Image (cartoon, rainbow, N blue to C red):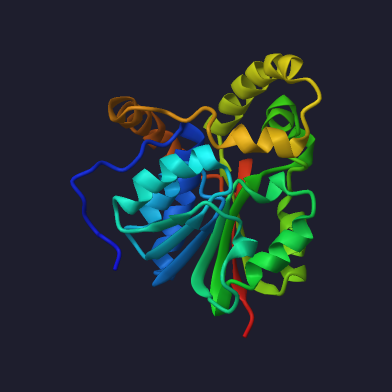
Length: 251
């Protein structure tokens, strides 16, 4: 059973992750899943939060990120595997399957969604986040190993093709996301000059370990500074730099 309280503080989130979690947490509140699978859980900052709210399993293929996620998530009662979702036992399904900032790293996004849907019980839900609007594709995306960004219409089409319905998409990140993205683009433009000819897959392996805050004091300061912008973005749920989608698996 998940632990609902712990003496250990939850892992810190970066500013962009706080903006994303503001949307995601309200969806989780509404869905109230009993079981949850997170695909590509990174260093486990979201996973540690989800593990206090459901019987949670996270999968993370990068060994270094997995090691951090394991410590964070098992401390609050969740389970983490150093694996791909395609390696999980077939036939086991979950109320909620989620993947945050993962789909844009996969060249065959249609194939990935088709595989992810097999892990959702009939009537269950997929929740995911992706960067928004291909016209914003820039150095940050290339350095992170992104293949693309999505418009709400494009993401809706992908989800419906995978057999999902009742698609609801929130655009998030206004106005802070624009400033954060501009800073990342400048930093990552310089980094791209040093990485040579690395493939998107090679760049992806490190993306979950970059720009992650360390230390709970720093994390608390980031949370405090970001909180006004979490409230502001709710005023413009159709404007921003990222998308959060929730969809239902048809019976």
